[in-house]
Length: 379
Image (cartoon, rainbow, N blue to C red; front, side):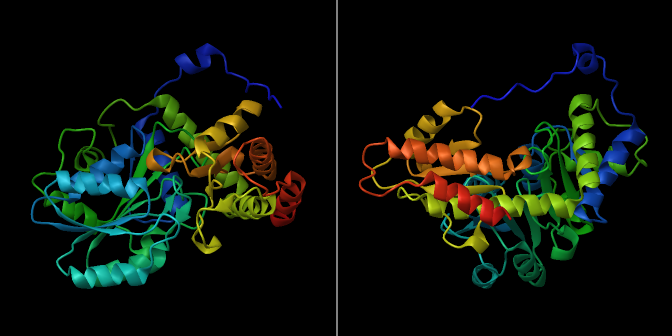
């Protein structure tokens, strides 16, 4: 099936866009704060979400600090590398990618390393299809007295996200997944404790795109009267538009659509057969933005995904990254793909690809059963 290309605006509408004024920029910040239900400062940073994530780590970590890094996917692995680069002592709490971390595991790790003063955690790992119980973990971290940094890039707008209520000190979001917005701009909410931590770190980035302190001193503390540098007007306009769309639709409705998509993808995959199984064992630990599947024995996940995409190149399918490429398949159902149609088409294509793939043995494939399961779960 082919789909028409989206209509493109006239070139002049893109090239002649005026940059946002300071007041307009601040208004977008307030919209982000409302989305997060936070009273903390919000900093919108002019780059993909890895920018504020690295800025948070390098602003908060330094020699002499001790970090607990919860690893439930590749982004947790990345944070561990950054923390070590800063000279911090790092203890990785590695959890199988087929599940989620628990508050009990975090509490036990903090008891084993009582000097821990910083905890890094990913809310939903789109890359591995799991999601962590941040509210419960945040309570444990707060009781210990450590600072909590949360990567909520994939979870924002897909599931409840309450940084203030959960005791999150640094909460980073990006608009490119469930929000259905641009990838080139991101945001972070910063608690008073986090500002104090950054200000007390002589190694925190200054006069740098990584510097949160620059935004505080040159933008927030001066009353948001003059932007510290030229904003990316296209990305800011797109972010404003996607926030407006969420407000008009209702955040609860957007989250519900993602929950339905996740339930439908899991039910459809189980009904499909062919030896495909959910990679994340428990539905309660499965992320609402992506359903990961384990390829059947003897079947290369990358080759299977390539065969499915050859039939429909616009499907939200991708093989796992790195070492997971041979065994993991991702059905990405976030943003515009959080629909029953996208899930059904993805599973049909995978089923058709499985049916003609050598090595699947006698395990039957039933694409019609998968389609019915998707419809029932969605309803």
